Structures are given as structure tokens and as C-alpha cells.
Length: 237
Image 1 (tube, rainbow, N blue to C red):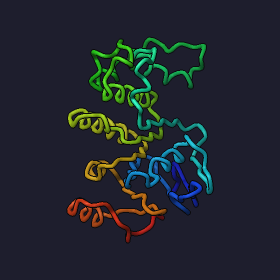
Image 2: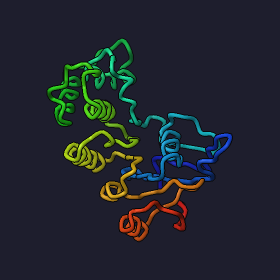
Image 3: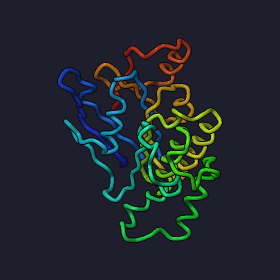
């Protein structure tokens, strides 16, 4: 079986703390993988490594093709964009910079697609507003729209609904499931196990230097008791 992404023996450590060690993962095209874990457990660091945002410290990471399109939406410090000199549409359209280059403008149809995507994400009234004028939830949707615009083969999301209300969360995840049905592969970090259960093909818990696979029984027990996972499940193979 071919995999879109393979990680072998990944280990990441700070001088005083090892986040995870000897982690293996093989992801099939079209899968939706979810990572959960306590704050500081290393799940965001692991996501960044898999996305290529930070380099592998120990181990190896490979993709099925060097031409794969990837997109990463991290957790946002919304205050950094209070004076950001661009509109919502301009931010989304910047997704075309890498594939087109700095000296070629997007086509009219590409611009129309960006506008439609913003509308689909409930941002019709914000299209031409400066990013700094938008709420945190609106800014988050703008950056998600930017990631979705290029229809990446691999989409990495870190707490994508952290600033969204329940209605927008439902809208977003329905859209993401439709992209998955078309072959997109998603890797997501969330603190919401119940939400993860509704979308994920596999759920993994980052904890105490390990990354553990949660089977259906483990998920049911975790949700029933409303406490953090404390170990004892099978390691990912």
C-alpha cells in the first residue's frame, strides 16, 4: 500500500523535556488524522514537523511526491494582525503567490473563486475589509479560506475552530468533509475529542513522550468519564 505521508522514528526534545520519541505514522491519501493531548504535550510541535513548518530533529519524514500541495493553518495570535495592511480578499488571494510567482496576477476566475470561498465561509460582508478590522473568528476563517483556495493534497490544521461559534464550526467541518471526499488528506490538532470523533478516521493522543492510538473503546471511555487519557493503549504502527 502506498502512503501520502510517512514518518519514522520521529523524536523531538527540548533541553529539559522530551515531547515524543520513536514515533511512526503512515497516512493514506484521503484520511483524516486527529491529534489530541494536554497543553504542552507536543501535539502542535508534532503537527508542525509533519507539515514541514519546523525541521525534523531525529527520524525521517517523506511524502509520496515532491509535487504535493500542502497547506498549514496554525494557531493565530490575532493581535498580530490588528494593523495588517491587507483586505480579507487580498490575504486569501496571496495563496496564489507561490504557484504563480510574484510577477503574475491571478486570473479573473481565480479571483472569483476566492470571493466565492469567502462567501461560503460567511465572510461576504468582510471581503473588502482590512484584516485588522475583523474579529478573531473572522480572521481565522480568512486564513482557513486561504489554505483551502489552492485545494491542497495535504491540509494541516491546528485548533481550526478555536475562535468559531458552533454554527460556523459545523459549516466549516461539513466543507472539510466534502474536500476529504474528493481526496484531500487532513491532519488536525484539537482539544475537542467529541468533535474529533465525528470527523476522524484515526485519533492519536500525544502524552508523556508517546503518541498513542485511541480505539473506539478508549474514545468511548474518555468521553464518558470526561477526563484526560492516561495511557495504556496500543502504539501507532
